[in-house]
Image (tube, rainbow, N blue to C red; front, side):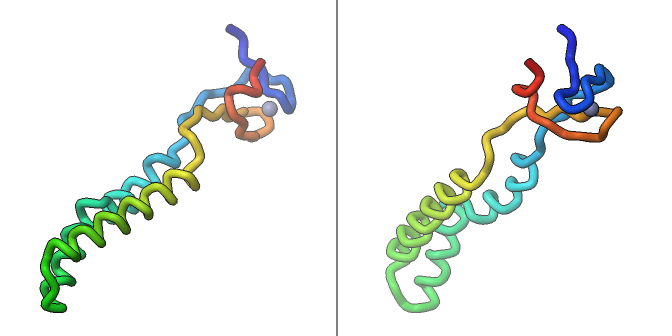
Amino acid sequence: MSLNCPFCHSTDIMIVEANAQQANSTLSNFASPAALGALGTTVAKSLNLPPIVGGIAGTVLGGLFNSFTEQSTPPQQSLCFCHNCYQKFPTHLLH
Ligand SMILES: [Zn+2]
């Protein structure tokens, strides 16, 4: 399999993994439904509400937040990096 840069047609290219997943892991851990559920429970206790109310509200909010971040996160894909012209491009441009 020969790989050619679509910009300069050099073969001196390298496949690199996109690390969008990694950049988002901290945020999604923080905003996980379980974490927000626990947070909601704590808030509900301080407001003299039944903990289950806060737990449900937090979990729902977390679910909404996660579906939003999942939509805005680009799908995991491999990128190629050209050592000749320093362009980065998705692997599907290689054909
Ligand atoms: Zn190139």
